Length: 90
Length: 418
Image (cartoon, rainbow over all chains, first blue to last red; front, side, top):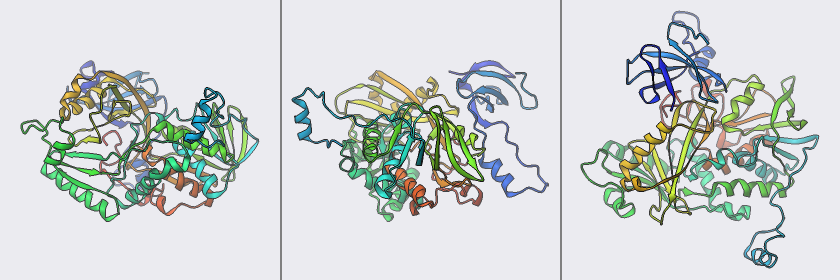
């Protein structure tokens, strides 16, 4: 069982959350010249690291806020969590 | 190579089974090979076997970081099927089903192929319509499919919950009679033994730590047991594909996720088919030892850990109990996890790459085991001929740029949802 610290509600069990994937991918800016390759990278390609991974989680059975989690994909250790407009401390 | 038969069994019985030949050797790596396969799992071993058998390429090494068959080929739920709707999948997996049917004879090794039938349960009229459509597509592609009604199923799985007031009443199901199971370890060992007998070197405890690439061509691999030269390298490392691709500066449309499975204590014969619950993600078959072999969803977040978490086991088994309430009395024997190389459209990638002599076999998602023979067959062709086989021509990397993706499930590039 993961224990995830929601930046709004505090530490809760994994059961209250749902996953939102890699937090580092950025949708290309609207109105800018965008190559097809940029779109393909955004939609399909991932770094998929073994180790520290920034990812999105949704406190779906709690405050319903989206936030960011820094977690180790090999040990499942959670280093830090923060709001969407913040950066990790660790 | 010693042939396995009832006569060799009797003969060796007289000497207390102490004089059997080793099934495969434990060679030191040579300085150079024609082809190096990275990954001694089912797909790697099958690829080496077909390279030797179909293409006469026997100067081949399989490099395995741990021991052969210790990854996903030893961790799956052993299900075989070709009940796909899309043509590229249907043709590929059906080709594999035909290989499964004669594999024990071909390998002179009992892989315990058991065509016990796979049944997908339907729990609504809409789902019955969808299954009728899929069944028709399968039959048009020459694959066996039978649409079952509620009364048919009452005879086949009488202990399932057939009450009309339950949350997900059973309306019927789609069955592929030739689908079934096989002994997963035996598949790895059978391929290993035959590949070894034709001259393939199976090198265990040998981790690949880097690649020698010059002017866009592969020239060798660096390993924990020294550098080895080669002109062709095939990657068959499933969940670890990104780790090797990183060494080659290749970014892939893949995420690693952990998938769990579990078995119950052994009980007397009860469940004679493979059954999947259609209103959640739960599937089950009974092993020859009597254990209920069960599986379901991914844990749902990126993971390279070969172990999962209890919430998903609970979620999957809750679905299981909805269809088989009597399973609540079973004790759990074991749970375990394996790393899935989840591709972004749910279909595999078997292709050449932008590096000459580097070939990629990955993206198997949940379904790598059943593809072991067909994957090995077409990957061996791709490596030997330096061009893709007709059967894997759609499983290319290019599809993530052209848009011709094979999204059988249609969930979009979010592997944890599929």
